[in-house]
Structures are given as C-alpha cells and as structure tokens.
Length: 132
Image (cartoon, rainbow, N blue to C red; front, top):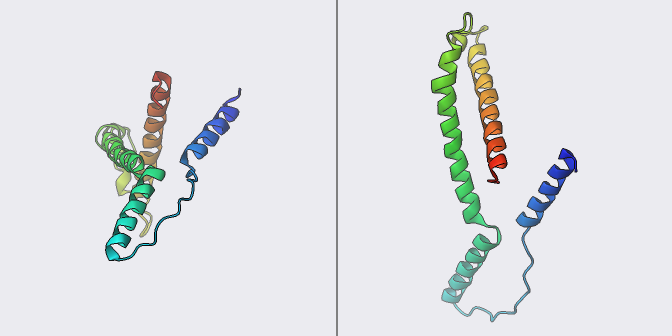
C-alpha cells in the first residue's frame, strides 16, 4: 500500500468517525410548559455534546494551543537567538523597506518554518512510538 493510499484510508476512517450517527426517531410527548421545554433543551444539549464529541475536541484544541505556545517559546527563546549570531542575520527583525517591516515578516516566516518542522518531527516520533 503506497503512502497516498494509506493517507486516503486514514482520511476515510477519520470522516466516518466524525460523521454524526443517525439515531432512531423516538416520538416524544409534547412539552406542556416552560419547565418541560427547558428539560428538552438540556437533553438536546447533552445529546449534541455526546454526538459530536465536543469534549474530546475541546481537550484536543486546548492541548494544541499550549503545545503551539511551547513550540513558539522554543523557537523564540532558543533557536532565533542562535540564528542571531550568524553574520548579517543578527538584526533581521529591524529590516525595513520604507513603511514595510520586512524583517518582522521574515522573522515570522522563519518561525513558521521552524514550528512546522518541529511539529512534523513530533508527529513522526509519536507515530513511530504508536501514539496516534
């Protein structure tokens, strides 16, 4: 199986997992008062949380946010200072062409490339270990 076929299989499995499952329609009694409507709304909300796996998504999002911050800190505090010792690159952030902060863009681009590479390495290592 080629890499492309493996990726397509993985994407198909991910789509199947994330698609909401149709549940059998159960006829309910009509709500009589505002209390009944509130209870139905609460039940609908709980079903929404369960069906779309919102808690897992929220946890993954929060972890990804802090992992991104960790990688950004590593790049800003460890890698970029090392790059500043290379002659001619030391003050990239101060480069400007007229009103355009060219150095800031170059620094952001380098940071993106380094962060993407670090995440690529993390994905490779976790895949090799068996954490998916």
